[in-house]
Length: 69
Image (cartoon, rainbow, N blue to C red):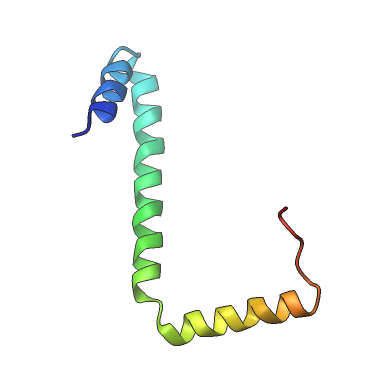
């Protein structure tokens, strides 16, 4: 366990049980979401990435995007 995580848990332990459970629920949801994203990325094929890149290039060429800068 990292020092930062240890510090966070130490602070959470000082909270009432209801707040601890609320934070734990948010953390668990975040972990589940992160695992789902990782699984999706791991199963994405090169062909799918190529199609996505082609779609993005088309949107840029068609002026369908907005500059972030």
